[in-house]
Length: 160
Image 1 (spheres, rainbow, N blue to C red):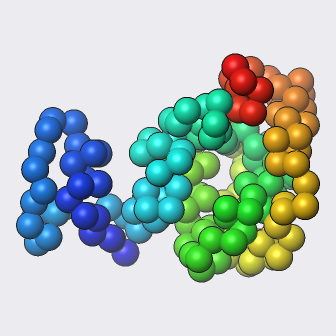
Image 2: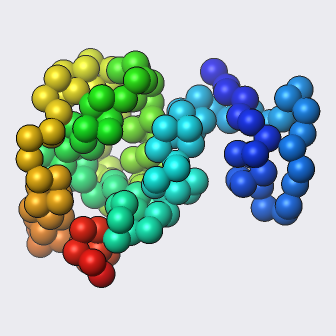
């Protein structure tokens, strides 16, 4: 399924300057990519690159979280994901887009794609009663120490 995005978003994604095109002339994007742009891209950036001190970068980093069972769960249990208005199927598709396309560096070769059933189960246990910065920091230190994840994963929440 493809989703048509407003001209303003497509202009921001295009390389040369553009003007808003009529809706029937707009290119379409795969639904997971469009859902990412509409639900996540405002903070994490159009291509997964954000202000890393305030919001974690996803580009070439988020894939490392799939090296730990707790890291895989963390991505779904984040309150912004767990409480998203998207369906479990849509969340699974967006997470697969984020992990395997935007943040694919570091994904283990045998990593399974998220399923709607896995997402549904994990969303019932949101991380809304912990310090997300501390929780993430513990995961990141394990990823760096055990799996050689980039030290850049530390930049979020540490003021670097």
